[in-house]
Length: 179
Image (tube, rainbow, N blue to C red; front, side, top):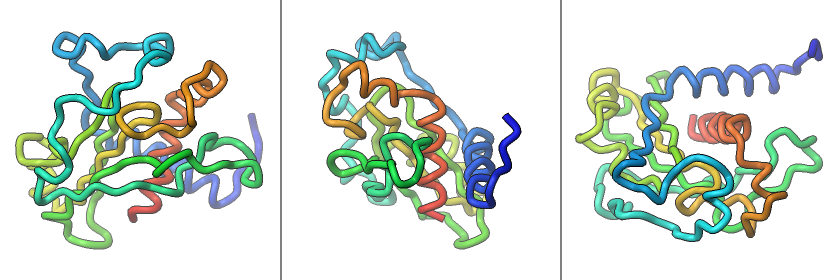
């Protein structure tokens, strides 16, 4: 496609590419958590809204938020975009070492499972990098996992919004919002 991009679309494209480049790790330990795995088929009957992860209140340096600006289809025309059902998309911030505006933002991209505040604490390598570079740490829960459900149900039609492109666009929106 050779469509001309507006400044906003170009910035969104840059942010998506930045999110890819900045992502540190996205690991699903299938051996330890056999209920997790690949494919929409596994998701259809999945109703658990949490695993054995630390509650957000057990990480004093990390705050949990809900991004209410998340939309179900990031690629729909603006006038047709609908916000997520419920609270929105869950994310966490660790500002402990952040140097403020102009300092780096390190984003942890959630995988196929619930996220928790512990992703942004001192047992993760990203924490050491944030300390060294005065970076803000952000952990974004993946759509359709944990407590971040964009739709009311997991019908085949709604699972069409479960894609890498949609997830990366979610990241671009949240990074733009956080910055």
